[in-house]
Length: 330
Image 1 (cartoon, rainbow, N blue to C red):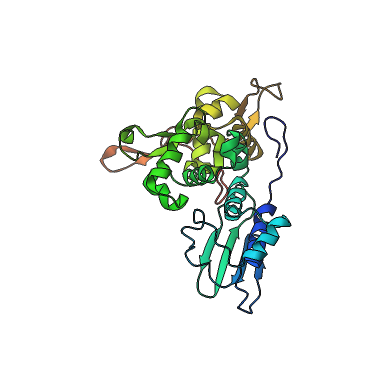
Image 2: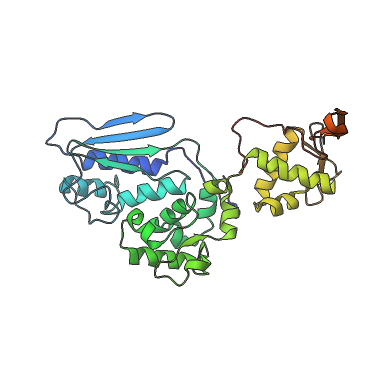
């Protein structure tokens, strides 16, 4: 993908740096007193890496991001760092989290028992809105795991507090609050406290309006069904006879690129057609297409009991909308 300043960023289903770090950790930190192999299971959407033995004593999936590094095989770990096969002590897992979230995927899942450690990556086509948004953050925030975990959580939840984020960041609530406050400052301006909780010790925070707009489809709770989108666009065109990219942005609070995608989908389904001579720019307008729903006329039925006529249908009711099963626009 090409960023606004012209840089090009390669997005991978499974980020190479994250996978390399996980494989290296599995080989270096496994329990060599056990005879089983490191097992890799790979499908288009899931990558699992299982290594013999549990996590080192004291390290758990719930504290692996913040616990002091305790390599099981210290000399082997030192050799790997010298050969640049692995990150510096205590940064490998951070890098895995960072690379996965930055690529638009979920962070890894880590499971540990007495016999093995299993790290699971969920891949597939990533949501490119995440890397696009992260690339616009201040440089120091782009590599900060706390920032990325907060961003990832707020793409799935409307509001969070320090108490909510403490177990996710694997830190005390006070440390989580400090991270939230930093992201709410104008220098970053990614989140804001909600009005009703601003005076609490641990306020609730939400994404700012511009962040929701820029993140687009990455914000899961901001999805609208295709029917809802169609109805609002059709209602506007019925009233004003036309619609533009700017109007779509105002109606749905989306970025210009997302508005363009919505219009292109409506044109492809022949609900709208281009009505202006201009092919690009703000002067491009769209009007009713061949499959634009018509209103039902009021029809009279035979007179019923009591001498009153019965009518079917309501004036100006929409006919069924053209739809695609399961589709979502944004």
